[in-house]
Image 1 (cartoon, rainbow, N blue to C red):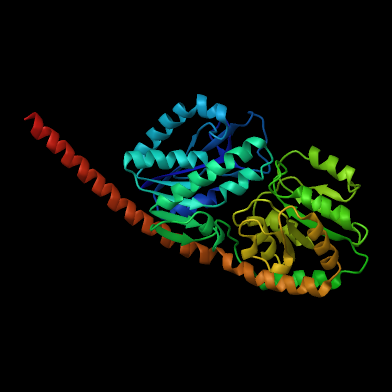
Image 2: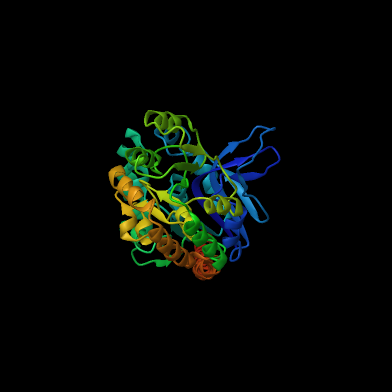
Length: 416
């Protein structure tokens, strides 16, 4: 069975035909689907790399039994006017060759794929990984705020009608985008290889060996583009309490331009405390980076279920975060603040930055909670859901073929 998967994710490709992701969609993600389906056609946005470009920091997304279709973005009004026809034609041809469609939502390409699949009578499923409203309202532009209500209601309607809907949160996205009678599943798109006991032991030893004057390393993982990850909130909070903390370093791991944040750090007299670590390949390089963090912060304005937070928890990191998206499903209430509330985040940093007992307790608690996202457990849940969708899709394809045959037979009789 050939399944088409659609989302607005940006892929990078070169002249040799290799496709890369910024880190979120390496080839191992496609293997989740390939354990059930024979072939996958991935539809997304694309950017061609110069011939001599080094794809360092990006992960290989292409591999056996995975094809890519690069389409223009439909996320801005001009492209919708000038390129929607091309997108519909190319997407329509690809869906006609597929047996079923999986649309990751919210996304414009995912929404178009659903619309075309319904028109062609192809079975489809949705993966709900984020909130359309939060993503656009907090993006920072007037255009995003104006489009947020429309995107919210469109996504809500598409998910409500979907025969199969997979959510990455336990409750948050289900409340925002409920399914009306379709089969639903809960399975995070985040997964960790395991939560070994020695990881926690090393974390506890790091906490216990910290001296009162030792540098406190605070970390955040997130793109430097836009406002979604709350980097500005973290900087403002640190500026409020920089004299109440031990010597500290704020390290940011993520892609994008540093210029804006460096200027903000300078205005807040934090330039000597902020370090940008660029992009690291997912997996062991990120885990090693997290092992050198004392306190992880996730002051996001918008999230589904944040991968970075779960990875930090799996390494025994104490974590404070906002109430955006599914973060409250991961952390204790005392570790939460409202999005944008740099005053409360500052109070949390001041209270917890020197509190060894709190750090030990959170390390143990977070390490245990992260076990719920171990790869083996999620693989079983995900496989069961997609196997059920495959069986449904096979039935729907067979029924559609039968109906088409009857229609042709009827036309033949009419001609006779």
